[in-house]
Length: 161
Image (cartoon, rainbow, N blue to C red; front, side):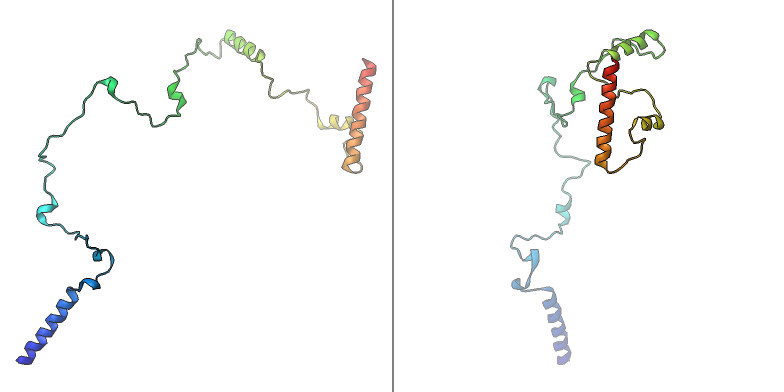
């Protein structure tokens, strides 16, 4: 009987030593002196029910001119500028409007993006080249030949004028 009591005492002591540790055996965040257990008591869990508030909420009220105009997108220029109002109704079938647009485009101060010349086929361009469209020799010789042909063409144009 004495032996059984000693055996039970030893097992209880082992269980207690597993659960209860010496302060210097703790590691991690639990070793800090300000460590608080995460588990709350039942009375601390929810002190106030959301359906029955103790304090009435304060709703801020002010005059409209005292409210700040907070803009999150300060570089939005399309909101700053007033909307542009057109003086005329656009009608693609109105000949007066078409003439107005054509006149406006013709009188634009900027140069046109594309100046198109007469339509010519590839064979016509090759006829004008001194080598007939084929490169004779190296690139340098071909460039010189084109320059000579252009000079001869310019001289012929001057002579005829």
